[in-house]
Length: 136
Image (cartoon, rainbow, N blue to C red; front, side, top):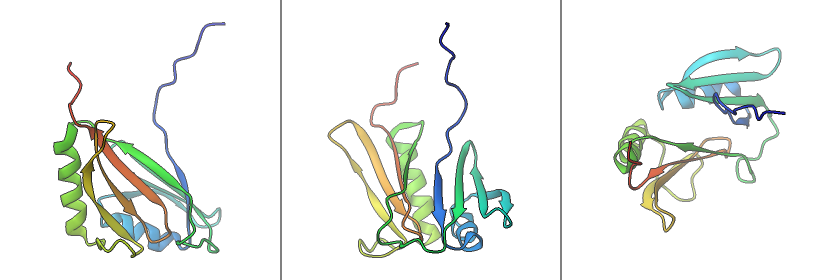
C-alpha cells in the first residue's frame, strides 16, 4: 500500500479554565477567534497559519499543567526575536514565577533560537527557529 503524505497543519488542544478569558489573553498576542462553541466547551484561535484549540477545563491547575506546543517559525533567529518583542510589548510578565509569563529567547546547543510563553492556564508554548535558516 502506498504511503499517504502527511500534509496540512497540526493544532494542539489545550485546557482553558475560562474560554472567554483565554480568547482575550491570546487576542493581545495577535490571535483571533475562528470558532467559539460554548455549548461544547471548545475554542479555536488562529494567527496566520497557526491554530490553537482549547477545551473548557475549569478544574485546571495552572501550576501543575503538562500541556504544551512547539511553534517552529520560518525565518531564523530574527523571526524569533521579532515575535518575542511583539509579545513582550503585549504585556505578559518576565517574572519566572508568574503565570502567565514570557521567557527570554536563548540559543540552544541543538541549533535553535527559542523563547517560551506560559499562558494563564499553565499551557506552555515554546517558539523557535533554526539559528541558520535552511538554504533554498
